[in-house]
Length: 146
Image 1 (spheres, rainbow, N blue to C red):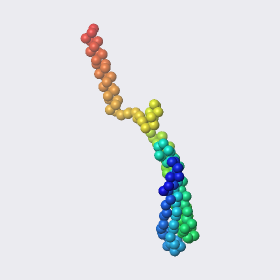
Image 2 (cartoon, rainbow, N blue to C red):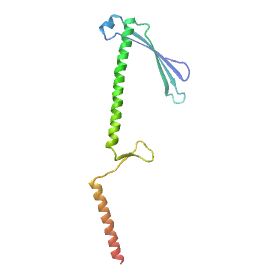
Image 3 (cartoon, one colour):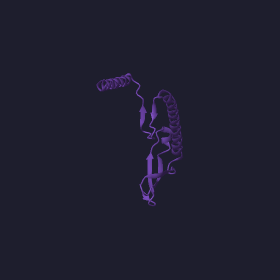
Image 4 (tube, one colour):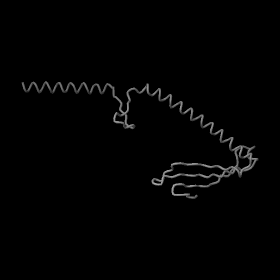
């Protein structure tokens, strides 16, 4: 680990192992030398940028080929999962907009605050009782003053 400056940190590390495939393991160990470079915000210390440099030159050509093929396969599978997730989010957003017509965001702009109208029978009963109580008090007030 080395600090190149107050805002750049470099970490060098090595991964050594055997490929899972029997055919690829005949070629020998897979050795990956990794250099991780972090660019930091000097005030907060948060990572602004992160770069990885991989060096497979210490591995055999069979192990290198296995590594790159397995990496491409894994990337393709993950890209498929990401595409499926984005389609699910899109369809749920479209269907949720139709289903939740009674939920709307806070007009003051707070994105975490939502309001929902309560259209239940209990609320209607409370409102009717409140109106009847007000009418009763107005009648009693007029009866005592007149």
